[in-house]
Image (tube, rainbow, N blue to C red; front, side, top):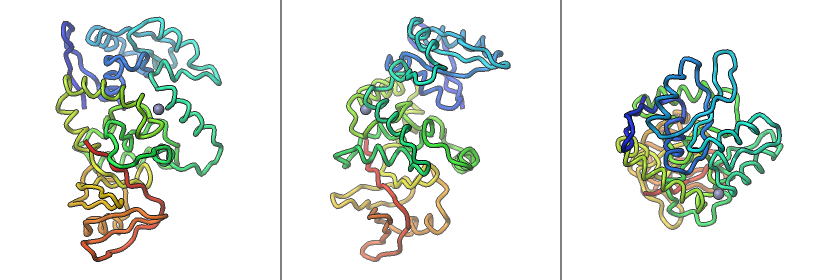
Length: 296
Ligand SMILES: [Zn+2]
């Protein structure tokens, strides 16, 4: 899907739905992301010119590799040059220029350096870093944002399956911040998120409505390909009372999906999710699971 926008005093321009690029560009226009890095085709140089004009940004092609252009896009040329200089250098961290808050960048790098090969999804780390877990700001919901999550075999295929299952949803732009927060209470990420969210509402209100409808809900999270968004509310004891399971739909087993559909209460306990209908226990779904209480 493409997203036509028009900034005051600028020619209209289309944000092409290439991965998470529309959100990244919104973050650049909102002033929270000095540099956006992208790979484009050589044939897209004309489009790059349109982007510069329509968004009031600069661009820098720092490399050409077999018909592909490595591009930095942002408000100030010196930031683009600085980032291009360190981009391919080992041990360099262009995080600040990419707009990641220092706390989030540090936490993420610490997790990457964690050499365990069976590393659980980064969402578990963010959740563990979150002290007050009730009523989390949906602006920081990164459950559907796949970038910089651990690579797992079969990920591209499974993600395609999820996209086919949710063909009416723009799965690759269901996020407000194009990075992972260090916790779901990170003040620095939240301040930046608010700026992006304001701009998204002004320029792309339809997309903002879809983003909010998917992010501002409690979500059960097992892994990047297994989650369930609930139309419900989390009580003080950690039980989610819900009406139904909402899109986007994931790759839960048919048994788990049927159990959640039959229930109206879910509670994550140590290593297991318990599902009830009223006071009657219907069953359990084994394995660690988080109930993330995102609200509007
Ligand atoms: Zn942070």
